[in-house]
Image 1 (spheres, rainbow, N blue to C red):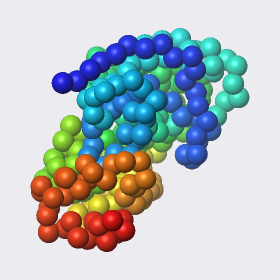
Image 2 (image 1 turned 180 degrees about the horizontal axis):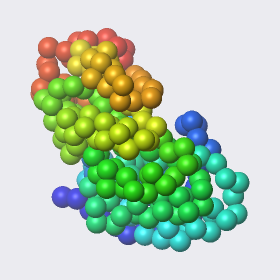
Image 3 (image 1 turned 135 degrees about the vertical axis):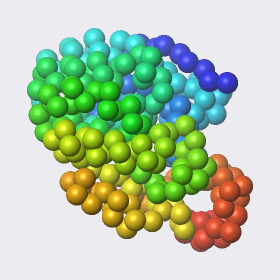
Length: 238
């Protein structure tokens, strides 16, 4: 059962190692609950007993905090998001991401957005008003059966491909994050072929198991793709 909690934040703009000056995480936790997600390490900073993907804290004062921060901090590119998905299902209700984008657009701050959700199309009007906005979708596979196994709550694969095309037609800078690359399941070149002419660049990232996500990965592979378990274990040195 999902647990929702409204919380207050003291700051919103954070430093980041990503290709941006700041990052914003409107939520703590992510209802996408992808089986391979390394961001589950965030659970240790909360008091949630729930499993990763079954809780989310909503920073209900995020917009007010950001309005003050953009007045004080040096203008720079903002990345949404690093340890959550700004367009996870709860965004339909709270619209925090949309409101945050509104503040950044008004202040003239450039943004980079990475998501697994076609909900990003809802905010196309604001995105077109943001200078040098870069918008990307994470695509791990071209096969829906793989998506359902590892990303059961995220948007279907076809919706993500379609969303990128819509964003590109709107004149935005688009990209695809092929991540994580799942042994025997992620066909990077097939994804690139399907997006040829629709994205400005492609990022790739290997499977990351440094933050306690191997048990859920192993369980998923054993259940749906047992013939690939040995290959997964070989890749990660298990």
